Image (cartoon, rainbow, N blue to C red; front, side):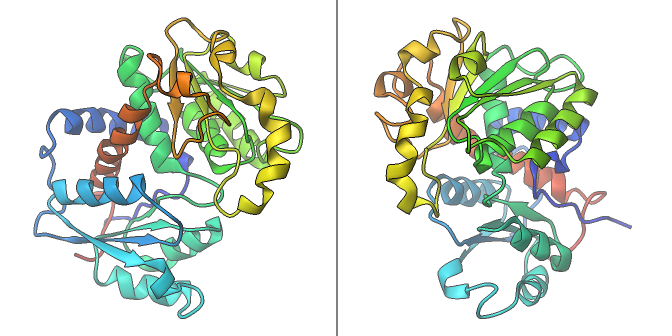
Length: 322
């Protein structure tokens, strides 16, 4: 009997599964229609409670290329958890669609959806994690730094430095996804903005099994030193806009400018999940410069998500609606 698999956090994929998804993503980037698990078309519900550009575009295009119908659901109209309970919405959707993709707030909401849906549920961003972005970023790093490792963890031997708000969902995703890929993951962040201790502990546990490494430091320079990939994100995440003024001062030493990038490996690549605010967390000469792979990174959301859905929808892994 098939088992429903979900992707709610980066470590929901094993090391071998993460590698398999990334290999498939590379194949689907080369041949967009090589897999058609949603042919019919079967529908996938895509629910948005938060603002979106890349998530909406990449899932809509990707589901269509997999042969499916992307069913966009306006979270403001659905008012999930207010107008109807999360379990009731999950039961309704699970009888109509092949999978559910949700961009929402608390991680507990998407976990509750997965518990009751009966079809694969994919985290398209929560306050705790952004795992689809993590897959796309690993894919991008692989493309620009010699490909996937010949065997074992997908990016063994490479290092990723994240600087800025270490308490946000992207920092948490890089810790888990990077450790799963066998990377040396460093997070440089100020006091008060460090990753959640439980997530650091989980990343360290994963790294112990993949040959990776986890470092949390207050020094941006230490984090970036010799790194293969250097990453940052906005200092003000969605839902914290009222904190913009108070956040700027502690993060100034973590701005990704040419001086900080000079501490990385000479051929290091620069990533940013966007939207970016030039002159704040990253300088224009860096994000628009020759080491930036930001636009490949944005495109790779589509390919990585197609591979993920294909993986989750294989008959031996998941069952559910059509």
